[in-house]
Length: 127
Image (tube, rainbow, N blue to C red; front, side, top):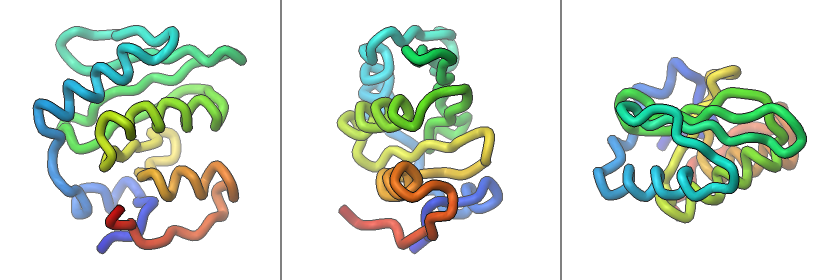
């Protein structure tokens, strides 16, 4: 079992597979209906989520459809709100921070929000 968060070089060996078409539709709906979000491209799943405090997040599907990638300037609160919305659609969703090249699941993202970047990774839960 892989420890999460993962560095960008560990991502390929730890993938659990691609999102199904149904899961991709669920993620699309979650982001499309997220407050103030806008779909950026009809051919490739990508969205802009504005941060009420300024700045925005860009969320896009990885080319292999195994995770979502995020980048931009936003508060941890906005990242968590987006992740919770995605998690409701697809519980095994993972997001990759393109600035740090780290992939997070729900546990590692919560540890990051609480403890910051010094939080030690733990095993990915089966829940």
